[in-house]
Length: 446
Image 1 (cartoon, rainbow, N blue to C red):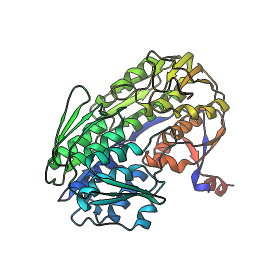
Image 2: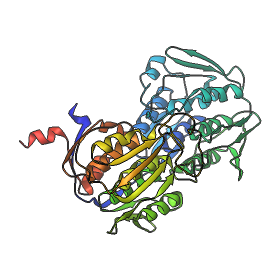
Image 3: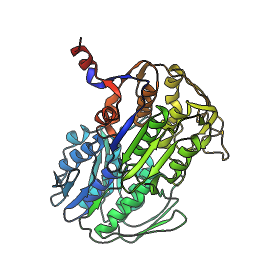
Image 4: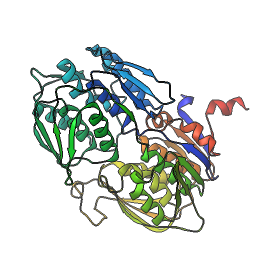
């Protein structure tokens, strides 16, 4: 389909201003949390992205009234009449998002049962859902797997438990939080994820009446309560989208002001951005990112869970590193298959070699498992327009950055995937002076 293909004419710097809104990794989860309340919730700074549409549809299937508020980007969610949804209707959402797995706890509390279809999401490495189900069993749920999905039943009220995560998984931490807040007794979660979006979700739940305390050692204690109310909350800005535009400015020798970006959640990224040779300026409304001229510098980088360098920052930055002088080393420690997108960059003229060894200071869990999870990027490289097929959300945006930095025209297939996490990205590209067009537009000019 031509509406899923974008022609990108590269070679021009991106310059101008764009606005970001609430974080993709928080907003859908806060929408799910509204299921737990007895009254309506009001969520502000909501981006117009596909994951939001998917969750909105699933909530409406379960009887939640969802409507827009008076403020732009505001949703009002009323769960007063939560009900069971038709299995076929739920299944229609299968494959479009991994968010449905987080409905389990809230639905078990509200209805005593839940159905979860097969799950989709980006193919960037193992993100097993079995751990979610194991956790729910510890809370007291009964689980049956069927070809069309998984059925969960809570014969009695769920109860608190002790859980230690083998890895500080964001999804698993969210699952525990959304389940433990109404479970009887205390839940102790060790080795929890502490990303800013997790902390913002905790703020949402606390506003609803939850009792949650965070320790300094990645331990979270949740004391279950009998009832929760609605919330009013403004979602924190999307630091991952902000970093993507920052990398676009760097790779294209541009200058982009990202209105809505905040320094606090981006400190680790900002340090790395400066080490590479990028410049930034923070004010009360956002952050300006630009290429100050001269050579970019090669760096050694390891991704890690927060407060480390986020894995979602890695792919856009690798594109910028193809323009840095020298050898950059990137060690991906979160998702074992996240460097697969570099093959297309090599076709465009980049020089990136993948390795199975841990090319970093700290050996990671992939070191002995035959995954190509380290990369050496040799630059600067002259990128040439090419035919590109988007593999995943962040990799897809990284392909856009590469196409914009390259000489000539690139044909990018699968751009609809980018709508999962980047609001109005086509309009933003044009606001920044990018020369992009849909094939239908091109044909209309002939």
